[in-house]
Amino acid sequence: MELIPVTDRKTARQFLDVARVLYQNDTTWVCPPDMLINNIFDPKVNVFFNHGEATRWILRHEGRLIGRVAAFINHKKAWAGDYPVGGMGFFECIDNQEAANLLFDACRDWLQQRGMKAMDGPINFGENDNFWGLLVEGFTQPGFGMNYNPPYYKKLFEDFGFRRYYSQVTKHLDIHAPFSERFWKVADWILKKTEFTFHPLDINQIEKFAADFKKVYDEAWQWHENFTPIEIATLIKTFKENRFIIDPELIWFAYHKGEPAGFLVVFPDLNQLIKPFKGKLHIVNKLRLLYRLKTHQLDRARMVIFGVAPKVQRYGVDAGMIWHLNEAMKKRPWYRELEISWVGDFNPKMQAMLEAVGGVKAKEHWTLRKLFDPSLAFRPAREIPRDTRLNN
Image (cartoon, rainbow, N blue to C red; front, side, top):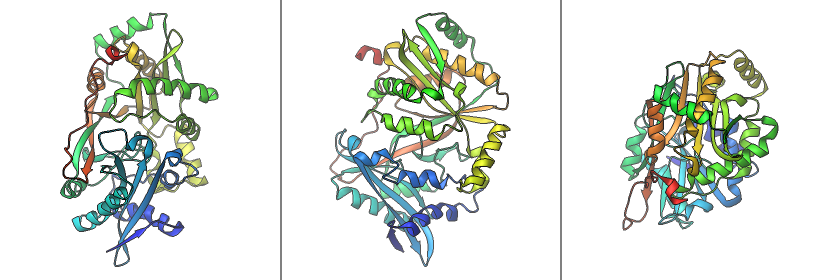
């Protein structure tokens, strides 16, 4: 077996091709756009290179591509915990522990040389809304940006010494199924409160809404372990890059006395449209994608992220935003299902909210951790306090 660093266009192309080779007979897998993966590893595009570094490898055997992996360090986050932690991801491999270990070893050695004492994986060199976690349950067609892998990957990771750091649950919601009467009573109550207002995204004011998003995110996510404030440049870039697929009435912001209080972001599930493209998003396929969007050739949307500022939690802000989303969905009858992905097992409040709206478990991913130093004590991710208002 030959482990080869990705150093030029040829090896970068082969890094992408590994997945196409391994999944060529898997009818469930959807190839992510090549451009999306390439941008993650382009310092000119990915703002995480401003405070981080990344590298990649491919694995060949007798001239055949059999695996790939990437390792990276986000220096803003790596040193925030009990010990420095790097990341690995974009792992693909044949069902062979020796091959997997070569890839894992490469990540471990590279990270150790840079002072890391552990690695989390499979994760992304970016925010956790895309390419995050190992699929362990629900091997059905993935939502756009969600990791998919064969069941045997779990054994490859665990036999190398990875342990589950936290679980990530994805739920599916039947858009046409009625919510509970109690839920609508909460929504009705907050919609009558004049100090709370709700507004859809205005794509002509991306910078304003990105700033509002950041304010809520940084307040609400501060209780997550190893939290770091979100990059506003990343937000603006994400909104602008997705401008052509954004439906503004599927993205809602809540305000309390004019101050940002919550957000809910839903995108069409592009995986239902791009599967035949095999990762190629050239001009012809872009036009095909736009046509399929315009003619509503999909029936699922994905809730990418949902948050409420701690000071107004338990006021029903979440119910108010979902009420507005539900009204928007009534005008879009082609949608039948909403994928809500993903919510960590460390977030009991959000798990309870998903139960309240009738979400049904569809998938489970794990973020795993491998300690390099056997003297370090492993522990799972800490649970977010159930009442963060008390800490404000």
